[in-house]
Each structure stands twice: as structure tokens, then as C-alpha cells.
Length: 307
Image (tube, rainbow, N blue to C red; front, top):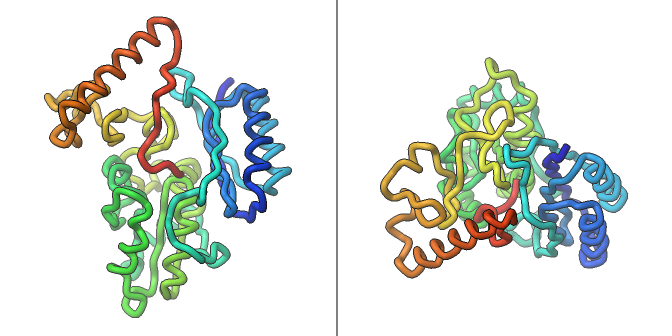
């Protein structure tokens, strides 16, 4: 059975290029698809394969980078999460743009039970560190949105909106925990006295928390072709606009502004005629590839990858 495996770890990597070659070769041999990002600060990946192949990748990853937490989930109905496998070398495993950040000084990791208590504490500022297109389809009640389109905008939002002298407690969450490692380190080093982060992110919370105790509202955006998952971590109702990557509900796809693979209510006014023609041609190529029983390699994921 093919499954989705997501992982990350902040750890010093002396020579990412050497590890990239090894992992690329191994992944291709094992029939893995997906993406692994390597940087001097660590590793971050989401991959899909048969269980035996994923087990082999886990053993190699832990041999190279040490013990880490792995998140397992099921594929969508098509059985395909990605079309190819690529190991990429990046300046950061999650783009943030803050130099000299001490990732050993992060927020206190809390479980779902403690997280629910923080949500009820009137003295705690709860921040959804994800981007607005993710927040649009689901978040925790009482959470504040920074209204960002990209995670690199978050540091400026902190500078403009958090005064450590007035805000003594801050709790943050993201999809799988990786963005909160940097966000909580930033807020702690900004001078906030008590900083918390949801351990394992939303996905771990949904896995560990019974629905009757859950404070999550809506669905959770994920960075693969499932687009969203519900509280049971099954594929949700949302699909994704090819033009702007915004998640779309069934209602969104019934509007006049929606054209499959071309535009949606969130980008219709911003997509020019030339771009529409390009997107329509791409959709034609997708249909031709499907008729031949092939996957169209041009499919890409969201505009700001990272769990």
C-alpha cells in the first residue's frame, strides 16, 4: 500500500550536496515520488511510496540526520500524491529570511490537552502562523491571523504587532510544526516571556484529539494533491486553483468565475487573457496526457511549501 510520509528536522548539515546525491539515487531506486529539501540548517520532506520503500527511506534518513518524527497519512482516491521525485538544495528548509536565528531557543512544545487550555486563557495571544489561503479553510477558534501571503512576511508582522512589554504569553501553531520552530524562536528572541507551540502542529492535534474535545474548525490545508484533510485526516472537500493555488470549496467551483485549471473566484479579476490562454493550453495537454494514460509532469503544488 502506498502512503504519504512527511518529516523535518533542524540539524546542522555540513555538505547538503553529498546527501542530496545519495538520497536522490536511493529514492529513484525505491520508486519514491515527492520532494526532499536539504539546507545547512536541516531536512524537510514529503514523499510517497510503497510501505517497504518508505521504511527503507526512514532508516537512511535517521542514519544520516539522526532520530526524527515521521508523519504518516493515506493518499487520496487517485493513489497519486506526486508525479516525480526530487531532492533539492535550498538556503533554508522553510523560507523565513531571518539570519542568525537561534533554533535551539524555541517555544515550549505542548500537546493537545495543554493547547486547549491555552486557547481558553484570555492572557494568551494565539497566532496561526500559516498563510491566509490556508487559514481560509480552517483554523482554531480564537486564533489571530497575521494575514500573510508568504511565511517570509511573518517577521515583519511580529515587529509591527507584538509588544513584549504588553504581550507576555504567545502560543503559535502551523500545519506540521516546522514553521513554528522558526516562528516561536523569533517571538522568543523578540522578548516575549512565555512562548508556546503546538507540538506536531495541526496534523498531530487532529490525530491525538477526539472530535468532542477538538477546538479545530474546518479542514486543514496540506501540501500535496489532497489539498485538505478533515478531522479524521481523510481527504477533504477542497480542490486547488491552478492559477493562484487557493483552495476551493464545492461552492467556489460552481461560480461563474471558476474555470477548471484557468481561474477561480479568488483570482479571476487578476488573470489576464494571455495567462488564461496559457492555462487553457496546459489543461489541453493535461487531457491529452490523461487520454494516453500518463501523468502530466507540469503539475505543481502550493505557492508556499512547508508543513
